[in-house]
Image (cartoon, rainbow, N blue to C red; front, side, top):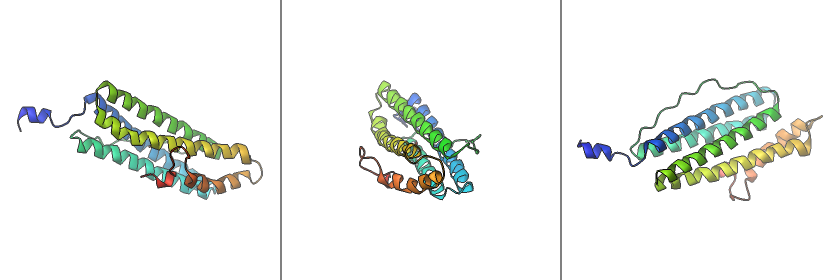
Length: 187
Ligand code: FEO
């Protein structure tokens, strides 16, 4: 292959490629964390929460694959992520949902940093691609906050945790009025 054609293999800048590969790692890590959370919930009898995190784990893997495919389709090298040191134990159901919201906020910041890199490198194509993730994060943060509201509204005493777990399936399918889509309806 001619040298100039090799150089034209990808229009993406190295900075954007690195940021997208970091995001692949982050999504993969989120998927693994949610699996650990599902396991904890199942072990402690919170079956709706277990289902919730199983679905979340699947969604995060889908996010990872979406970016992976985008890099490949753009002629850039996607790196298969290595994920280690996943926290397996949690103090309580509330601890799990608080950790989950923190994680989603960190992902949102990371997505925004990629958009910053796109603008800096005048990569309008990747910026457009990232718009889907921005909306997805709005949805995920909304659901995580709604679930934490349940802890305040229902309370954790007596049968509180049982009822919180009962409401969790509902929160997920209600979705966000802002995005007009439910988390389960996300691509
Ligand atoms: Fe794919 Fe919830 O970050």
